[in-house]
Image (cartoon, rainbow, N blue to C red; front, side, top):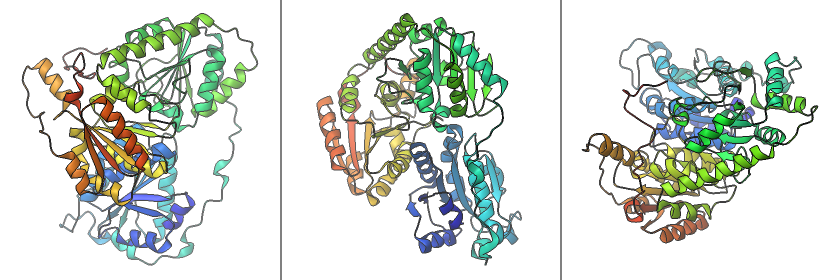
Length: 547
């Protein structure tokens, strides 16, 4: 198994040792080529592997025990699945002779494979010791094949202890990099023709564009045809957001929506047009849509695609650019001016909506460089300005949970920090989400990862509190009190400081980044001051009809 991981270029794994995976850990230690990072909860193992994969663009690997350990990882596997992150999940399994008998063997879970299959692209159970290596190799191929996602491999403990022939598996010969010389599909040609004819185009880039490594092609296409570039949260930085063509992650803005209505072509690249980004598909898109996606089931799923160009985004865009290069094109300067002015006004409008937190935004933005990764948990500052206004100039430096669940920010930050060393990682998290994985401060401290955890403390689940205040005029279960977060951090080996002013926030974060060590900065959000309008997100009662 270690032979296979080495050939795949794996340098680090995340997990927790258990009686049902100790032979795996022992093999890693004996070989000494792959670093094992022990976390405090298996959900973090999955989240850290996910964060590592998103920042590095490489395979993330997690190791769990069978039964409870594998079950604990499910929340992180869910996030990896909806995010299209390539993960290899290695989990132990009970002895082969007891499988499926439900006799109460230690750590036994009835039909664990079905549990894993609900979230994994594939689940593989090793049935012979000689099949361990080939099974892991096949799982890696499945995880990294488009559309990417997590793949789980169950290895019964008796097979982990069994003897196996060293020649039972041979490395891949190396022809996986061969170029497909087949003629491009007709849809690619039609896409190029539609794009060439457009005079008011908009590109909407999603995480698929980043996973395909198509940043240069997206930027080249935008400049070639004079297109504004709207992004999902996961594609921020595909075009630097200080570029005049960048609209960024601002699809919520009414004027941006008007701009889309005036566009004569929308080019969707690696995006599903998710509900939160389109107000549950109420947003009107241009009549002509070219949708590029490696997953053939995506085009037309949420909006009708005039042209469904199915294929790897980098390959499709390279072909389109080649076709456009043969045709002269006149620049539409009025459209370019309109794109730039709409984007500028949208940012100004959102900035005014966050009130005194604009000072926090400015202080943090001044401290970032292109190598700093910012991970956002699901919290009001992340939703309102972290995901939309905090500047991003390079892809894979802005990470957020696509399942919109709280609690994975610290896990993502841990994996991101391993991938991003020596540059720092900033984790924006609310007090509610932080408490789900607060014990991972011990992991970050143990490995001295340069993670700066910024806890925005409003004493509870802020978004849910605002929704309850608006819809019910009463609260239940959303006020959490105010634990001593700084004291907790220090007890786990992390320096900490509490701030209550924007100036103090900037000073504390600067010191934290300068220390190059684990650090926690607690922000008293109430002392900073309220936003002009309480933020309630994009949710609404289900009685409101959807399109």
